[in-house]
Length: 126
Image (cartoon, rainbow, N blue to C red; front, side, top):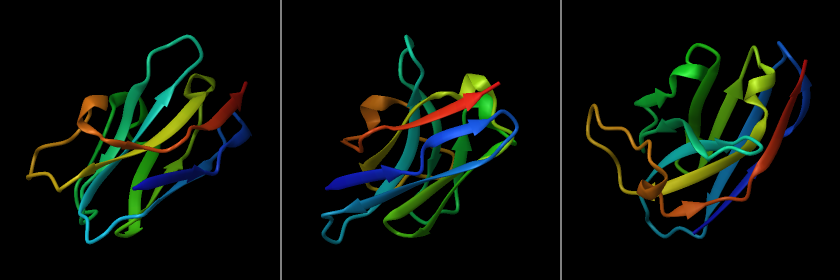
């Protein structure tokens, strides 16, 4: 299984950006997917996750109301980021965990994901 993230770049504070992530190399697999980010000098942190069906999503508090995660088919996921702030500057990583989650259960830990894409850098200027 390979994950390919894209869509990063430079944006001014208050602007928007959309990240994409495509999962390939799967064979009849079911995957929960998520986004993490790592700012310079900081630990990687959870951003958002989405269930296999796309019907259940969960966000870290700092992005609620500004970011939106969705998937338009089983293996392509997006992160729409609006009202970006300089503190959103980071390398953004997409990740996948085999299987789906139960209602009310969300995968927010790095250790729960087994497949990772390369980072895509998002820089928000003030």
